[in-house]
Each structure stands twice: as structure tokens, then as C-alpha cells.
Image 1: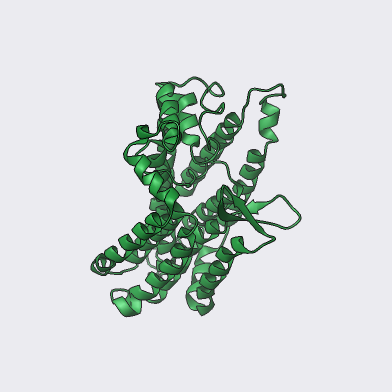
Image 2 (image 1 turned 120 degrees about the horizontal axis):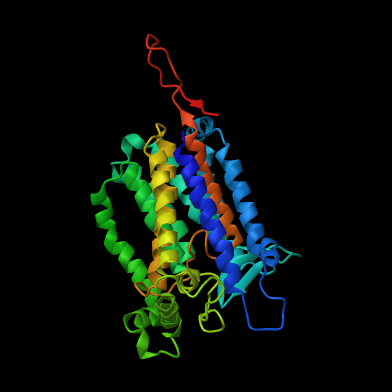
Length: 386
């Protein structure tokens, strides 16, 4: 009988395949080069990242999650992940390994190589793990502000605040998914309501102290006020979506990728998918995302371990919110910000860590109650299904 983990795996694998095709299509250019062929796609960088991501997901899916949860709940050193993440987030400012792109210090370059990665990707998946651990250990007092919620808020403020300095979108994503985990662990919504003004002040402060963020907000209100300048990006994205019509121009036959739409391989890959695959392609992608979320939720709600349940909720919240934020930006429903579409936008670290996190959910689905005879005494033990 098919399990939720099988549906989850198929949805993720299909999204990765679509991502490889879309990224390779977006890299096409008008030149005398060999062009894009089946061979070039198979041996492309995105295909290599896909292979690494699938391997990471399969390895994670074999973890003995029942034992892992027992060990993590009993170990106080799990909290050291937070200072480790803080150190990692400071590394993009260290000369020699910092890799600045478009004036933003978000990347680290491994010395002597061309390999780069964003520490914020590790923070994005590390924070839900630490908060799940915190919520499981302090479940009895999570309804109290000082003993339960406050330590979690400090974690959010430290990590999300530092990420927001260079990447407001990812900082908001981390804060939002962390809030979901804390509420699911028993924190009172009323306590969060008290903190909403503080959060809004922080977001407004991050915007008004950065001229390019102010420009993005103004452009969001009326992108056609400066169609050749600040509004150019979102206008070209909307043009690509509109040109797709029902079935699209055909894979590889889009026009906006030929110098019209910036960031077509990364943040605006969905616009390329819409232009080349039309409404049918766009709906297929959204259905695949819904498939991941529903399969993951089916796994999360059946977990007896509070730590596993909370971590699964954190992973799903991060995945779903990131997808929604990107789709809103691409369709002009939110100000432009540099946040990728999970499993589709070009990027190695993001694909690998996202698949590894979803692989953990697949491992959770392998935890089942052992079969017992009707006369046997009830048990709460778990066994790992083959």
C-alpha cells in the first residue's frame, strides 16, 4: 500500500525535474554556441545539484527518527546550534571568504574553489529544529511568557534579525515559520499579539533605513510609474506570465529570458515556466507544491513524538511560506525581494538542504506501531517499517 512518503518523494522528484528543465531553458541565449541539448541538460550543473539533492533526501529518509528524537530531547547541547548559526551568519563579512553579489554580502566562497553557499539557508532549516527541541523540552511551560515563549523569541530575534540585515525576505520567512512552531508547541497567541507592534517596528525600520527597500515598496504600489527603471523587473515578469496563455509558447521557446527578464534562472523562474508552459504548467507546479504539503502534513499529524511533530510542522511551514512569498513577488502581489522558489529556482545549497529536510519527514513516515495480537497488552513502543 502506498505511503505518504512515496507521494512526497514523487512530488519532490517531479519538481526537481521541472526545475532542471526550466533552469536550462532560462540559460539559453542567442549565440553561435552549441545550444541546449538533451546531453547538455543531463550534464548541466543543475542536474548535478538535483542528483546531490535526491541523494541527500534518500539518506535522510533512512534515519532512525524514533531514536534520533529520543537522543535530541535528552541532550542540552542541541541549543548550541544557535551560536553555531550566528557564527556562520557572520562569515559573509569575513575578508577572504566573503562573496558579495549585487552589493549584498549573503554568500561564502570556499577558499581555492568556485563553490559558494548562503549561510541563511542553514539558518532557515536550523531554527525550526532548535525551536522544536525547545518546545518538546519545555512543553509544560510553553503557555508561560517568561519560561516558555521568551527564549524562543530571543532565538528568532537573533537569527532573523541578523539575516534581515542583508536579506529581508529570508529574515521574515524564518521569523514566520518559527512563530508557527512556537504556537504549535503551546505558546499562547495572546503573547504573540503583544509582540506584533515590536515586530512591525522592526520591519519598518529595516525598510526605511535601506533606500533600495523603500524603492521596492514604492514600485510595488505603482510599478508603471517607472517602467524602465525600478518597475522594469516586475513588469517584465507579468509580461512573461501573460504571454504564456493556456499552454504556453513551448518549452525553450520563451522570449523574456533573452535579456528582458532579470534573475530569470533564480527568483523569477516561475515567470519563465508560465511563459513556456502556460496555465497548465503553472497549475501543475502549484499542484505539486500542494502535494508536498498535504503528504507532509499527513506525516506530521501522525507523529507521537512532540519534537518530531514540531519539526515537521516547521519544515512544512518554511517550505509553504517560501513558495507563497516567491509566487506573490513574481505575480506582482508583493514587493520584489530575493527569495527563491523551492526546488525550482537555480541553486545548489537550497535544493540539497530542502530535500534533506523533506527526507527527514519521509523517515518519520517509516515509524509505525508494531503489530500485536488482540490479547497482547497495549504498547507505546515504535518500530521502523521496512
